[in-house]
Length: 245
Image (cartoon, rainbow, N blue to C red; front, side, top):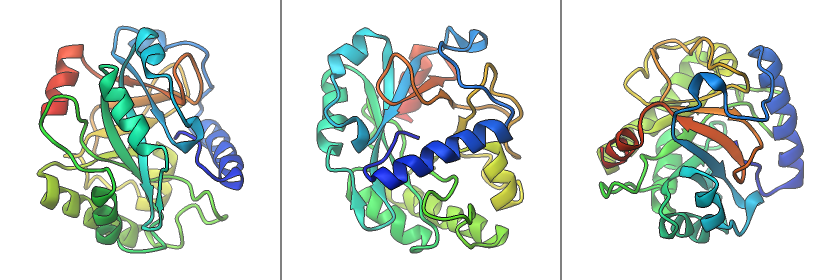
């Protein structure tokens, strides 16, 4: 995901991204994968990108962006409002994501905090559904945050249920296959949630259990757009329909 506000976190995420790339057999790319070059391009940003030049991103082909809103129940991206509203003003479809720390508080509590602080959704055709970023632990060696596979599945379900209760939509789930297999036991329980796959490679490769296709694919952590590079699995009109719900 887009780098965070803390230098120590940034280093940890870089290491985690490298681990994920190796674990998934991926190689960071300099260009859009040829296998999906005709798909709408997008990116994701956090406080690390600060004041983004949104008209420039739009001119370089950004059709959508996910903006980090929150983490756990104690952090809100101080640049969120400017990033989120700036993207919309530039004509870019945007959504918000939450970075999960499942050992800190319940899925319900973190979803509620996220929705109060920028993660809400509206059917205006410009707002992507809320997204849950659940992946390697950037603050310690235990990549599963000390939770058993069953408890992790329960945590994700609680987060999803609260988002669905408040917005009417299931959240997009951002993850990678290695983490999902290790920390959820490759649970197939979330097949009705859009998948945002992290895999830095020329192809999306095998998917986590339960999913037959990816909705978003994060294929690199740098490129022509600010932050991480992503693709949407469909046409521009389908992206609009997806945003509207």
